[in-house]
Image 1 (cartoon, helix red, strand yellow):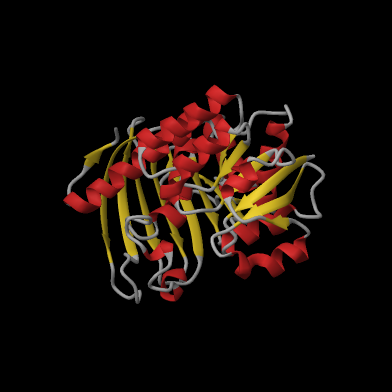
Image 2 (tube, rainbow, N blue to C red; image 1 turned 60 degrees about the horizontal axis):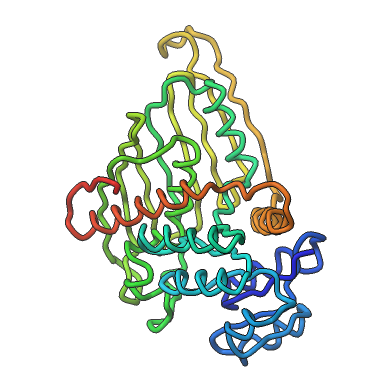
Length: 336
């Protein structure tokens, strides 16, 4: 059993704790630290872990094996490097950092210390993503042509003006860091590296100084095209649909539970080609957050490697940097 400490006990930090506490025989939370201790004390008491005064208190505690970071993105590098120096494994919420250089340094620090560094791309663990990856890897999709995705939530409408997620320095390009990086990681996982991006991002409705409408065009190194939209002022949604010469797949719903593959058929749409049967699956009830934390716990204990490769994490941050730059310049930008 891995004894973990949660760092940051806002909404998402509590989701992370709830996903495994008293449910997992791989990992449990025994300690925690957060910016305003008094706001989280009742939750810590309810969940049975000790809330300490500072991050440094966690790192000096020999009973803590790993830290789980649900903190502002700009703090991640220094927190990861400090944890690695203290010999603690690290699970870091996405994005790991806001620059490729910081991502490389963070991961290198963990390698040098011989500790795990895992990033919270929980969609990687979902059966719908696994089904899509099998279709791509097995060649059922044929030559890949295009992918499009949308991930939205109304959270931007309810952010306090002094919330860190309402700070453009922490969350550039609106929904990119809270949502869009999940879709970008799915693209990298399924289709490989991205060569160029073109982004527009602006604010229309949210009552704080952050963007709420962001759209991005992609060109992949394999030649296919792509598109993604994030909105922070609309109903929750998630959709990824890809097209190839062999067919198309679509993943839908906020919990990714709806999966469908439609083969292309053997003729033009004339009304005489016969019915094309879609292959549909329902994956309701799958707990992505539990799956990622248990995978992290197993990796910390010498089990299977955490299934989000460092190279993919670093490339994803390079894509993030290019997207932010494109939003600022209004021009297509190459991924570094």
